[in-house]
Length: 329
Image 1 (cartoon, one colour):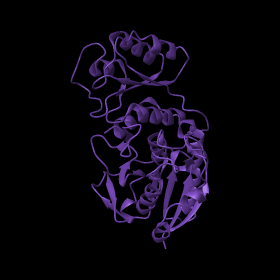
Image 2: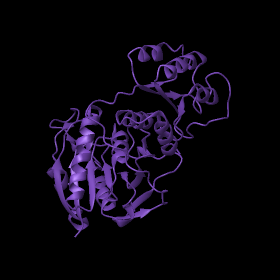
Image 3: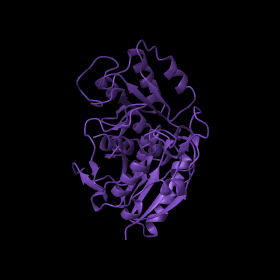
Image 4: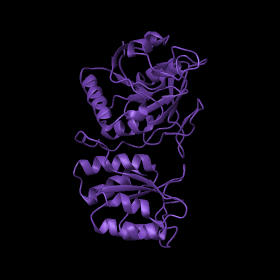
């Protein structure tokens, strides 16, 4: 029989309340999640382990590295698929970090819930069942890390949270889900291109790349203050197809001259950055001429994580440029 490993990290799917009217807090263990989800035994034999139990806003890079090491060990021990339960607040970040580091054909499927176990219509068990179905499917092999909620399955590189409250909170802007779960079966919607090689896991520590949004009437003061801290890389969520103000553009030039890697993404939900539509100061063409890298279809959040892994791994400027260009397509 198919053997899956479940790693529980916490989040709303593992939360409940002891008194009506109180806010949800971590309460359910990995074993509790299994017991609350009917039908799992028909999908696979599942071994569960509690990896952590915190709200996902409090997770760190070290937590994700431990999950990666645990999943790698479970695959080497012979499991057919990995399921990770997680809070939805930062689910897309954890999924993408794991995806960048994952070198196995065995899938990792990350899932969670928008409603705690104490709420009417709590969807955690349904999401966990669908995630297990996906992780056990031969059609999910080779896809890397996936996010499965609301019976839709998304590539980690594309998924993002689009609503703070709705059940259909995760989407893949520009591509749509890679598959769906219907009648306890994973159905692919389209086939991704070949995956890029996994990156090397970085040393322990925090993500050292700041992320700044380019706001209206930006005089560059925030970027100036951040650069003064001595960072090695920075990601700017630019307006439109990757634009910043003229004042910020001058700071970008100075930062690059000082050896700082600057990546510019789009703060919009769809479309990403371009390379030659505009040529004014602060435009994408101007920023590229100054030495900035464009994130393409990568969100600013994902570009930040990718840049950190590359810098932490000692990648040279040419390799960083190539990796961002390839993964931003």
